[in-house]
Image (tube, rainbow, N blue to C red; front, side, top):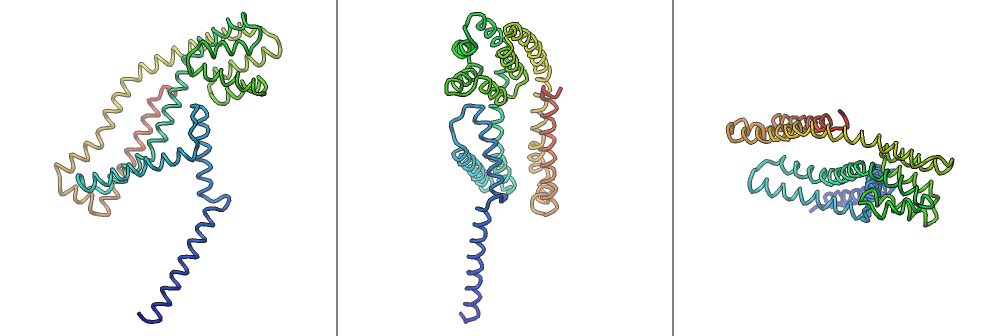
Length: 292
């Protein structure tokens, strides 16, 4: 090895070292894209975890998220190497591993909100009766937390606990409204706060809100029943794309080879997969009862 080669390797190693130092500094710098992404992720998870009463920290959850994504990638690589020989399949598994934790939390949040909405009517009726028997609003909220089922009992217990730890009762109720982000919970909180300040007939106001809630939940159940058949058809249509891909591989091997082993074929494959993904998301939004 001559002197010029040694010098060149030394300069390259030196440049690589400085590059790594600069990269580390950029990653650690305030306001970098990675820090902004982490802050957004942490804020999203904190909001969901606070609503779901999760004790897992954002750092613990992101490690679990990365583990799921890497496990899905390894599973995709294993299937690609030993069974299907489709490189894009591994990336599909990796994308699914990234998407699944987001969807899992989102599904749990939606389920809790649905359960909360179904409980608002009996909770309002119970609270209206409790306000006529209890000496103050705190005792009425405590009765709700003790005698009703989650999630409404959990929310009322958090309000009572915050109040006993020194938070103003109005602020604790407002925190519950912000956390639940449900119109009828907000209406209940407004009725409690305004009635508590003005001395109005809170029990009657709560019964009026319960009547409106009962009608809304009835309409929502009807919409869910009417869209159930369309949702089943959606899942059937969802299976068409992968079935067509498998049919192409088995029925037209030459077309499959062109699709997988040429640049134009891979581009077409990726674009068709993206179109199918966008269509799936769009169809789910259309079939959602909230958008009808």
